[in-house]
Image (tube, rainbow, N blue to C red):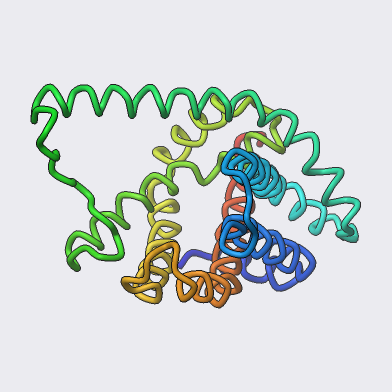
Length: 249
């Protein structure tokens, strides 16, 4: 690991407030996601609650680079500061996320139509990726690597969206461009995330997502997952700040 990861880990250790805020929101998000197991809710109401929960969590996730910069400036991270930092990002996220969902459903519809045309209405098309928890070892490693690769290309999206104040789609494009330009660093982040995701996959085993054991394991894994995520986020921020300094000189 490069020196940035050591510095990122030190920054994480100096930021217990950010860690516990992230862990708390992660657990709350998991609880809301599984709310239907404990409370009888209308499907539309349950869906609406989940969408709002995810938007809040994503906006908070995008605010983490700013919170780390506050920590670098020796500012005290309070609940009020977290809300004041995340709330404007939430407002900026709503319309782009609605558009992303629409694009996803359009792409899914096109895929279904093409699959029906190729395989016929009564045949099931081959499952290229399968259920990651029930697939063979090679398929599991491949699927996890593919997902981690996508995440690695978006490492800088929170920085561009929150600190640089670009729109969501511009932030995605800029993050992918910068990631490709800095593959040696990104490959190290990929490795750390990949190991973390593989551990998660094998801890979950073949438990169905709807099972109580899956939910329990999710709560148990959350402290480690939050730590790895924040470590990578802090490291990416330090690396980006180094690029900015080198560019301005």
